[in-house]
Image 1 (cartoon, one colour):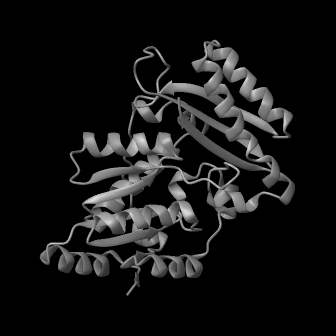
Image 2 (cartoon, one colour):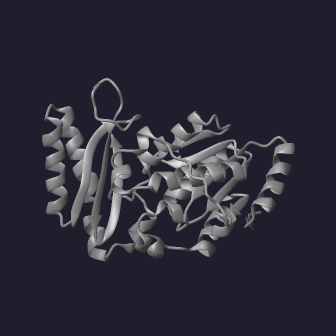
Length: 279
């Protein structure tokens, strides 16, 4: 049976009972508007934990664009129905004032991995992510936290947060779930027009081609420039970046023997799409 809880007090009472029974508790933090990518995280959590919490909270502190916050889809009833089908025990849907009560003044800031790429383009975004994730880990008292690899930089920020603050939670990064044409699943995809949805897979295709180019010896800058040109040729409005980075530090690639990640962000139909792949 799936229950919806809205206060930290209710949640902690339930989790206290689970812990007393010896259950491992998993949490899947989300902002709602759930798709198969989110559900894959919930299924993974169900397979590995005795009890699972999915949080649904559109976090105002990680939006640096008020219009994006306003437009973000909110579909709590449909989300809860999907989570019941998966078998999640608790859906935690707090109000903003439950998460950030009057007088709240604390910010959690992770340096290093948060600074390039998204950190430069969306000032304050990762402070908002780190703050709410730290709070959700504290509220849920979870043993394991499940995050998608589609937000690769976010995943590295969360892992750094947990390591640096000695949080007693294991962070599990799960593979990106894609539509059959390769587009990474995202709650924002529903805002694409029909024509835009047809063009959107070009970002992933261009990244795969750039990875092949780079592995075959094409210089990094040339491979990334080809990818950018291919995306723009498909009708995207702009490409903010397509770059190779050290997969762990998100710094420039200086050691070819370390894992490398290609990360991208581009605009289509007024919707910001992000993606990443291993190189």
